[in-house]
Length: 556
Image (cartoon, one colour):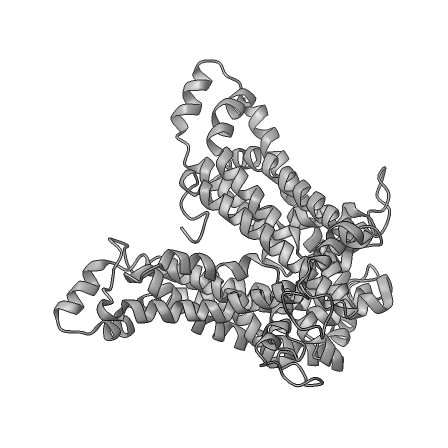
């Protein structure tokens, strides 16, 4: 028995080492010792170049202000959904989470087509800007706005968790003393959840630091570069020869991201000791119920529905400049990208296979790994979970550089994975490892030990106990994790932007390339299709919600 436990622990450690610690270690070595010897002066020189300093300042600027604006958007929704009797609050919460599930480049594309001079939607009402007008979304302000909308769901989810722990007794006591709901909110509720506010803002900042899709579409056309787009430009222009330079920039991004993650962890650690949760507090909105619900739907209309309609209307016209009428509406762009164009149809197939392969591998591996982790001490479990979450916490472009460094040179027996589809699959496994493990770990932790002990006493070996007891009970969580992985990987761009090669294009890469080439109607058709896939999978997840552990689906 001790031999089996030791073997399972070694397997768990080996998997975590390969998928989490190895790429990070390789990246650090390339940054501080590119020639095999420690060279801090060279690292400092790369980070202090004018382009690197300017990109760093742009990254901090957009990430900080984007996070603050995300707080302004997400906090009212969190209060309304978690603490009031707001009508349709569940639907509002579900819709607010959609930007988190939709790829950043798709979000950026929808807003570009909404407000640009060639806007099909605004043009149908005679509201489009004059031809030749610069798109107001391009540059710093547009990036900050879309960071806020893209990351407002992070604020919503984090803050909602804190608000749901505010005891009803405190709120009722303040209301009985004559305090208005607004005063109770400002003087009691928000000070109590201040750690969650800090944590939410820190997570939004981290997401902004690592975002590539939004600054690529909104910043690169006007030469407003962040660290992620600077890395992309250098790799695209000079190839692997600049790996030491981009490794240094990647480490800088990683440090900024990890500082934000550390701040979030410290804030939530303080939150655990501030108050004891009881029955969640509720505010009755009274005559303000309908006006506030209307305001919430107005915000959803502006942030999601109008940009989505802009994408749809752009996708159903033959080309830019053609007004949308019943006679000009066509599905030719969808036929082109789905059936006729070799690169786009191949990208759909590649993305489906790579995302599906990563989802299946992680779903099947998550259950035995979760069982193995349970055999470690509590402290060791926390360390292992931290290692698992490390690649997910790091920006995707940092992980892509790490994968290039790992697999550029030939490996024993299998050769080099660089410029093959396998390197993208491995990167997806590393990137979304934590996403698959979280629901399964929660489900396995809730299974009574008595079931396994009874089976062991009856003579069932560990493999049989896993197949007949743990797997059936944890299967819904594994399916949920697989769907989350598939959604995240299906149209991602941050990782595959640096790892794709001819014949191995993914949807995110093809969408970005089509938009750069001026084929915006075809890019819009791809974007609309991916949104439909994501919404369909979200509805499937919602149906699974009743069978999943609490907290797996943030809108429930």
